[in-house]
Image (cartoon, rainbow, N blue to C red; front, side, top):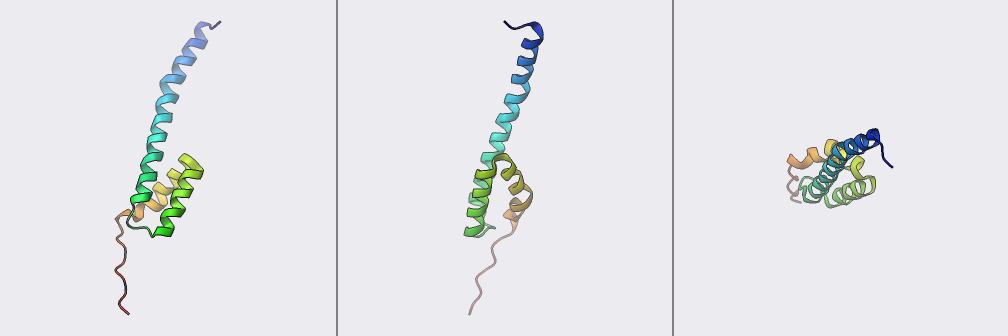
Length: 82
């Protein structure tokens, strides 16, 4: 059924791709939670980022990490007195 080469390839696949898939899933969850809790974003921006992350999966998480995540340290501006 399986030869020696096939078994080695199957083992390599499980040793490389399964941990990589788990790491990408953990990164996706981390960015999703970060977008929801980010106080530097307005409510509309949060909704947009959550949709981007959910619909584009790890690519959306990567985009958020480099574009939206940086606003995390930026506090919201205080309301203007009129």
